[in-house]
Image (cartoon, rainbow, N blue to C red):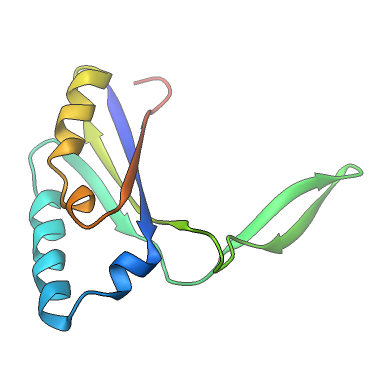
Length: 112
């Protein structure tokens, strides 16, 4: 069955406005979704800026990753199975990330 990666982008102001109780409830929803039978893997990214490599005269130029000014930052991913893009979209629409103002990018994994 084809696999799709769901890239979760966070709207930083929206996430930071949650109370500790709301954050706990959101975490429980995300964890429950990760246990769905079609989910094959999930990971939250560390809250650092990462690094970006770009070509520069035949060598890699390394810079700090996405900056704090970025409206949406990549916060994690899920790897899921779905028979088609339509099914992957349908499954992603039920993800709590949308409820909390996040953006989900869906991409099919090559060769699956």
